[in-house]
Image (tube, rainbow, N blue to C red):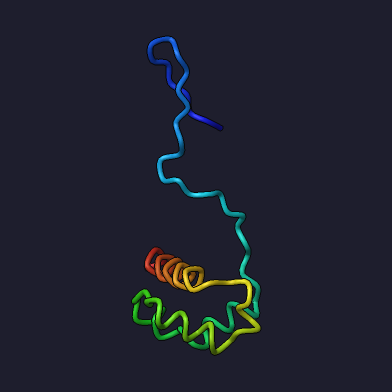
Length: 89
């Protein structure tokens, strides 16, 4: 859906504010969750979001299980897990 505004009787099309492309959500498989939890559980338990280096290390440790994921997906998975735990408290 495009945003349009009328100005001087002309339609002007506005681009999306953030300029991001829509991405289809990929559900996490059990194998992927197990691989991330195996290497990154200490981040979840300490309520700390990992940086790129820690996420890349996890990717290198489990290349087959995490072949569909990049480092940002791992980071946001952990961030969301921490948020879910904090909501329960």
